[in-house]
Length: 173
Image 1 (cartoon, rainbow, N blue to C red):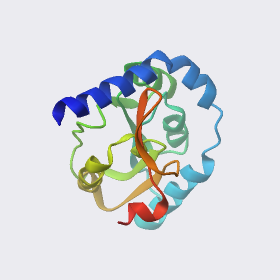
Image 2 (image 1 turned 180 degrees about the horizontal axis):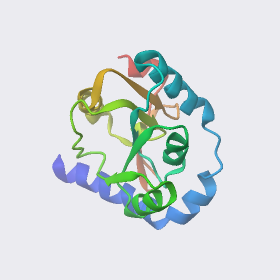
Image 3 (image 1 turned 60 degrees about the vertical axis):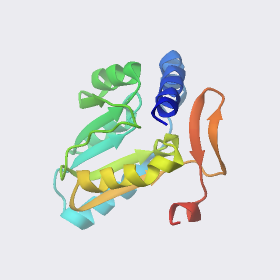
Image 4 (image 1 turned 90 degrees about the vertical axis):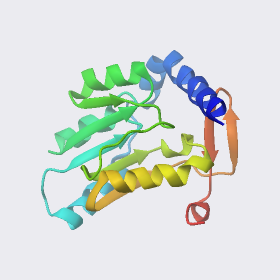
């Protein structure tokens, strides 16, 4: 099982590492303001209008990190792709951790919010419950998890990256 998971990570991370610049060019202008606002509004309701520590899980090249920072929050990025981590640090000026999604080490009760925008779906379904548990442990009491993932059905390699496509009702199962 461990070899299979390591292979999933290796192949998927190679996909992003080899396409880091084209990924940045293709996504830097994506408008995800609706998702960012959904998390920020939920954080305001949960904690009041304070500076929140936010984990951007799967931060990629750092587009959303910069937005959270400009909104007065303290974002921390996490990505497995070395090129994304370096770009995100330089672009956003934020702290960015390089971690494999399948071998996470998150500090307990640290974050007001976790932003997992188009990233959680890259975790194999059998690891999703454990990953959600790690997220829960990393959140402060009353913390907020925001996730947005592409919908669909199927799990495995799509091209040379691994993905788990689910419908909304599958997440509650």
